[in-house]
Structure formats: C-alpha cells, structure tokens
Length: 213
Image (cartoon, rainbow, N blue to C red; front, side):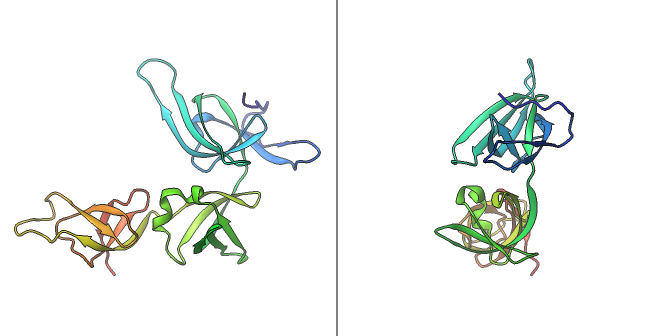
C-alpha cells in the first residue's frame, strides 16, 4: 500500500529511521506521474520509467506506471486510480554535458561544478544512440544517482545508406528506409540521398527536415 500523507500537496519531512536520512516528499495524484519521478512504495524508492493515463469507455480512469526499484533495479508495474495519492520524492534536474561511455555506463559532467557522474545503461535506454560528445542533457538526480535523462528533442545525423531516388519521385512520395550514422534505421523522403545530413526526433528517430548546416 502507498503511504498516505495528511496535508494536500505540502512537502513533508519523513523520518526513515536511525540509519536513513530524511527525504522531502510531496503527495500528488497518480495521473500527474511522469517519467523520471521518484515515488515511495512501502518505504522503498522507485523511479517512474513510463506513465499512461487510461480512460476506458466504462469504469474508473486509471494510471498505469512502469517503475524500477532504485535499490536493486527490479522493474514493476503499478496501476492506480487516477485520483489516488502517491508520495513523490524530491529530485534535482541539472544540466550535464555528455563525455563518453565505458563499462561503468555513460559519463556526464556537471556544467556548474565540473563534477562527473556515471549513468546506468538502463536509465539512458534506447536514447543512447543519439548521445553525441559535448551534447547538453538534463539529468534527474536523486541523492547523487541519476534516475532519468532528457535529451534535446532533435539531433543532426548523416544518412550513411539509403536507396537512390527514382526518376519521377517527389517529396510527397512514399518514404524510403535509411541507415543513420548512429546505427539507427529510419524513414526519409525520396529526395534524401546517402551523405545527406538530416534532423531527426531523438524520441523515435523520425525524420524532421534536411539539416541546414
């Protein structure tokens, strides 16, 4: 069961026992949960991986949340009534610059104090191919651990493989498959050829426009 606080949306200092530090928690409704939020369930902290509000034709609207337990990485799915109240923990959203990847994960540098932090692969997830050296990102940090990452909405990449444009094809014709320089496959307009730099959405790799650089 979720801990219930007694005071609306006001933050509350919650004592976790003699061997745990105090945390700042706020009570929110389940429908407001977003990716990267930290919630407390039975005294354990979970990071929200995804959250979807479901409104069935009949019945009570619910929020489906997929989460990962911070202590051991176990993933769970929770379903709440959209108005059910949950405890959300405080996280810091900070700007970092991407440096490199190694066996310890993805390394970033805090742009304010130059401290570095390693981010686990499952936190970066399928956004990893879009990370580029010196790219600025926002990390959600809880007690020194990055629990979520937000990349720029768009990235510029080169088309390294695609079919040549056929005579008579126009930009309004069906899109064709292409391989990008980061190893991601996407669909591009017929007039885009190998060697062309294009702008794509980092959330799904979808084509936006031809790069202007």
